[in-house]
Length: 156
Image (tube, rainbow, N blue to C red):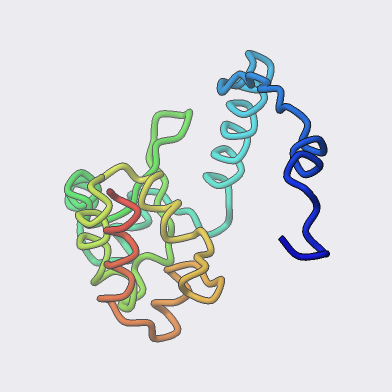
């Protein structure tokens, strides 16, 4: 022991016993209700956004039929989200070639054809893309492979 090292008993005297506090890992009913309300509000806002179109409008835009658009949605080739009026809304930007050609592969990598899941992945900024959303990164030239790697990591 050197001059700077206190005796062992002094070192232990300074240590206070820890008290373990149990924390409830679950959200309260009020927290859960608030979270669900915010989620519902977000979905309504997103469905009513100016870039969302109907399946009929998507059919005109893509030169196909509404039946084809619905089949694409079901297979994950196209993003479609249901809204309260019983219809489906589609983000118009997905028909850009840089995005459209990767949609089905993204859906498969995520392991979901759910429109909200795919839409959320493509529109949420990602730290691995320098804060860009995958959709924006694709439009700016990020490789298809990089986006699919991120989708596969999220889909696990």
